[in-house]
Length: 135
Image (cartoon, rainbow, N blue to C red; front, side, top):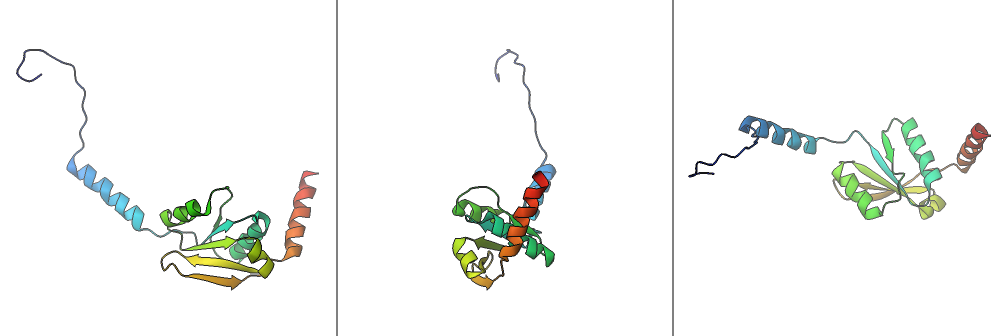
């Protein structure tokens, strides 16, 4: 301690300003980068149909990520914002009935509905094929 003759063992660490500045710059750069994902698909009780939509979008050359967990919609939208996904597609039972998908553009906040042919025969074919693989 200061002002006494007592000795104490100590351990310490210190970072220089250049290291701290480089780390902060790297974090800022990461936060400004756009995601390589074009569409983030959130299925609501429509996992099989959503997989087919994802497959069809990938065939068109888009990078697609699909949520497979059972998280709440609000948390999934937070994830989309955090990971800077440009578009989020929500596919629920109503969208399947109407052969459409809801797409929300994250930057602008605009939401649109696009008609999308969810081919029932493709879904049934997938189920049959998947079942045959495991028999």
